[in-house]
Amino acid sequence: MRDDVEQVFRAEYPRVVAVARRVLGSGREAEDVAQDVFIAFSRATVPASEARGWLAAAAAHTALNLLRSDSRRNRRESAAAVPDHVPDVADHVVTGASRARVRQALSRLPRTQALVVVLRHSGLSYQEVGAALGMPVGSVGTTLRRAEAAIRKELEDDASSL
Amino acid sequence: MRHPSDGLLRRAVDEPAAVSDADRHHIAGCPRCRQELRAAGADRELVAAALQEGPPAGPDDVDAAWSRMVNHVDDVRDIKIPMLARRSRWVSVRRPVVVVAAAAVVAVGTTAAAAAVDLLPIFRPDRVASLTIQTADLASMPDLSAYGTVSETQNWQPEAASSAAEATVRTGIDVPKVMTLPQGVVGAPRYAVLSTYEGRFTFSAEMARVAAERAGQTAPPMPAGVDGTVLTLNAGPGVVETWTGGSVEIPKLTVVRMTAPSLSSQGASLVTLRDYLLEQPGLPSSVADQIRAIPADGSTLPIPVPAEYATSRSTTVNGETATLVTLRDGSAAGVVWIANGQLNAVFGTLSPEDAEAVARGLR
Image (tube, rainbow over all chains, first blue to last red; front, side):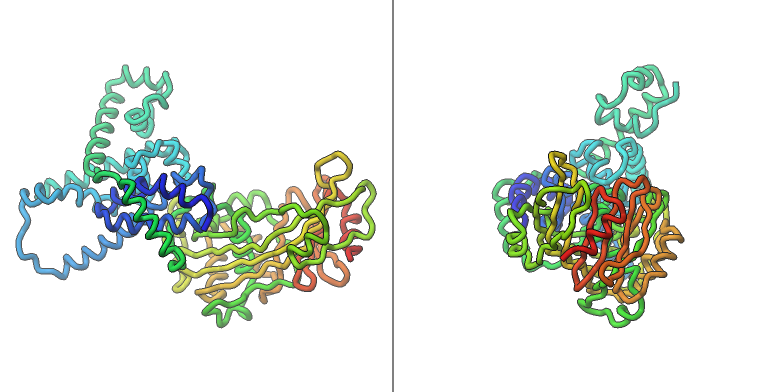
C-alpha cells in the first residue's frame, strides 16, 4: 500500500462517508462505499494533493451506482409485492419520505447532474467540482441549476400525486 | 447587456465573489435576473434540506474504519470505481498501460485470441512497426482511459546508478556499450535504472457509457464479458545511458535497453476486445486501417509517430526489424527495435545516419 494512504484516510474519511450518505441515506452502506473508495485510492496514482476531489467523486459515483441498483431492485420488489396498506400523507411526513424521494430523483438524473449536485452539496467549491469531474468550471453552475430544478419538479409532482 | 446565464446566476447564490462586477451590477438592476436568482436560491435550499445527512464520523469511527481497511485491503482484488472523467488529470492516455494495452489489443487477432479465457499472455512482441497518427486524429481519438480503471506502479521513472556495473546488478540487464560516439557527443555517460512496471486496466461498461454520454456520443454496446476484463501490462526492468555533452544538460544521446513489454488478459476474448475497441466513435479510419494491417499475432509493438512532426521508416539493426523516426526539422532522430526479448532505443540530437550507426554498433 502506498505510504500516504493513512494520512489521507484520516483526513478525508468523514467527508467520503458523508458524500456517500447523502446519496444513500444509510450510514452502514456509506461506510462500505468509503472502504471501497479508499482501497481503490490505495492502488491508484492520484497524488495526495488531489485526493480530496478524487475521493469525493469516487464516493459519489459508487454510491449512485448502488442507489440505482437499489432503485431497480425496489421497483421489482414493489411490482411483485401486494401492499398491505395504502400510505397516506401523514406516513410520508413521519417517515421522512421527502429524503427518500430526493434519492429516487437523484437516481433518475443524468449521471453528471447527479454528481454535480452531490459534490456541491457536500461542500466542494465550483472549482473543485469541475476539477473532480473533468468539466469546465463554467458548466458546473448550469448543470447544478438544471439538476436542482429537476429534483424540485420531481418532488412537486410526487407531492401533487398524494 | 446580455442576461447572465442560469449557471452563472446559480453560482452567484453560492459564490457571489466569483461573479464579475459587471454581472453583479446587471443582476442588481434586472428584475428578470433577480427573479431567477431567487428561484435558484429556493431550489438550492430545498435540495440542501432533502440531502442533509447526520453528524460526521468522529475520531473513533475513523480509527475503526482504518483498522477494517488495513485488515481487508489484501483480500480485495478488484474495486471498480466507475469514475475517471473524460480528460481526467488522474488517468491520462499517456499512461503506458492504457497506450500499450490499447495498441496491443487492437494489434492482436484471432491466433492469440481464440482461447483467451483466463490469464493469458496475448502480446509478447519481438519486433516494432510505426503507427502514423495525425495531430487532428489525436484530438478525435476516444480517450480509452475513460473506459475503465487503471492501477499502476507508482513513480516509474529512471533512478540514478553510479556505474554500468551497478545498473546491471540492480536490473540483471547488461548495459549496452556504445562502440563509437557520434561527432559532438563526448565524455562519459550517466547511468540510470528502470524498475519493473506493472499496470492494470479494468474495463467498465458503466464508465464507457458515461464517457460516451459526456462526449455527446452513444457508445457501441459492450460485448458480453468485456465488463470487468483486466489487462495487465508488464515492462522492465531496464537500463538507461545518457550523454549530455559538456556543460549542456540537454541529452545529446540516450540509449535504453529494457525487458520488452508484454500484455496479459483476464476476461473477455481478445477478438472481442479488438473488435470492440475498433468500433469506438472517434477512432479515425486511417488509424484503424493501420492497426488492422499490423500482423495479428501479438508479435508487433506499434510505435506511434506524429505525422506533422516526424517521419518514420523501417530499417534493420543487426538483422532485426527496427523503426527509424526523424523529426521533420532534422534536429533529432531515434531508432527502436526488439532483440532477444529486450526493447532497445537509441535517440538524441543526432542525424538519422548517426542514430542507425550507434544502434548497429552497440555491444
